[in-house]
Amino acid sequence: MKTKTIILALLVAVSTAMAQHGGGSSNGAYKNPQLTTKYLAALGMANSKMKQKSEGVWVSDKGVLIYSSHPYGDNIKGFSGATPLFIAVGKNGKIQAVAPAANTETPDFWQRVKDSKLFKAWKGLTPAQAAKKKVDAVSGATYSSTAVIKTVQATANNIK
Image (cartoon, rainbow, N blue to C red):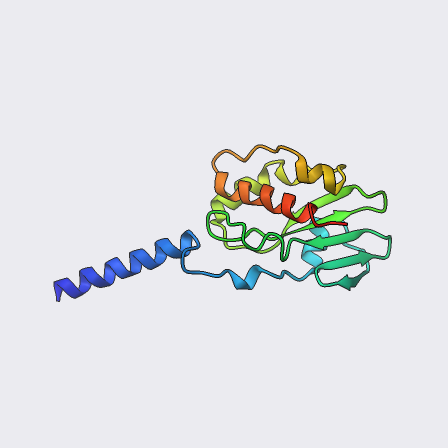
């Protein structure tokens, strides 16, 4: 009986560790985030009327384009999986905001990323500039913030 308990405890520990590090999860629930009012508010566009232009691209009634990081950042992993996001690009061709979508990152580490100025690092840049900008990771949330940086770069590289 003792052996079975030890084996069960080891199996639980291994599966928990794999889930925390993205080892056993495809993270499919977050690969194609939908643009909701929550994300519009995070982009500073709470009262905007949106129309889907194509998969992962929306246009507001004011001509602002919003791009999903899907599929460009789907394989970029943070501590616990992908870190999907949205990028709002104004009519002037410059990034107005970057906002995170739902993800499976550890809440304490993810809060450090959200509390930092990381999501504002690309504001005012063209997507081409954003794709090349060197941005420092957030101390204490290195995996998560590095994934955000790489996801912004990958998405910005694909904004036409």
